[in-house]
Length: 397
Ligand SMILES: [Zn+2]
Image (tube, rainbow, N blue to C red; front, side, top):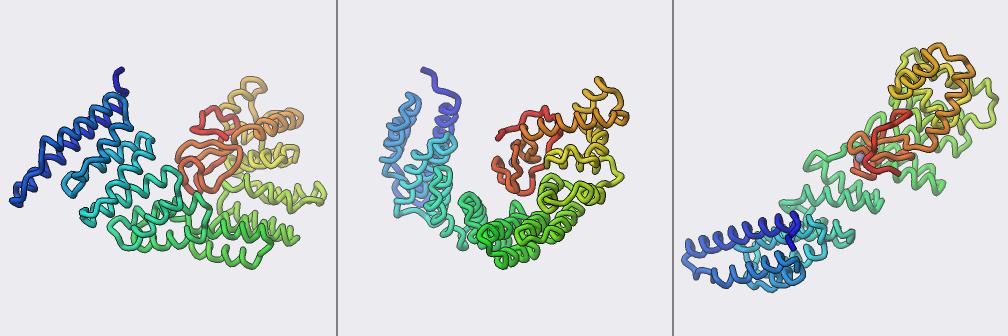
């Protein structure tokens, strides 16, 4: 049976690595005047291992490579190549065995030992063995030549485990030596802690975390929304509505998150008061009006008169929907109040059943909003999608 392309790639890479390792070892031994390695024995073992790989017997191949006695500074690169290729193929257990085998060799240089520790950390991370990966990366984060990469892995581990306090420590260490991948991440870690404290009723602790978030990132919109949530918890609806309004003024894209909070703040007030409150949100800019109508429909406010007023702007801004409405009912600006009302009701039903957000970095689509994309780990990358979204998302939830 012919080997599949990844197997061929693996074997080709191993062949090159084996040849390079053997030649390098030969050259180094010759130059230092020491005894030359036994090229025949070395190549016999390698080719026996390669033969097992060709026969699709990776376990036997692995045993041959693990039994090889000559893992030293000259031939170790071949073993790294084998381990990394196993990991790339998703065969993490085999990669772990190869890298553990390298680690167990006492004669390795410090550089190779650090390389093996890092590779093993990556294996454990891929296998979901976060506690083991964390132990290795913590050692490497302490001044080794791989400390930046180790800190980046530690951040990923703490984010996955939702260990925000440790994430803050790792982020601070990373900022001291390199530009972090996501500069606003630390403000989100403080917000995550604030959310946890708020859920326990510790509003003082939550506010302290929000203060730290603001110190890390000025005008941080998530912080303003959590402040509004605390105000709602403490029965201060006016303050909550005001905080939401300020958050949206700074970051108009937060409308879909802010409006449901304003609705909670306005619960129990009469329709005229709700209308007056939302009037201040309506701006002359057609794009802003379209966004307000969209967010209001997501929030279940589709029957409010200000939504019907902004609906023609939303229809014009959404290319697919605009075309359908123009073809069936004419110019969106000339729709009757009844037509607007029926359209708003139908759009509300559609929106509540479909993905409303998409990550601008990787295309992950979801009905719920995430501050950190579950697909690519980017922070603040989720944005509302078009009303009739015909673009396939990478993942859908
Ligand atoms: Zn993403």
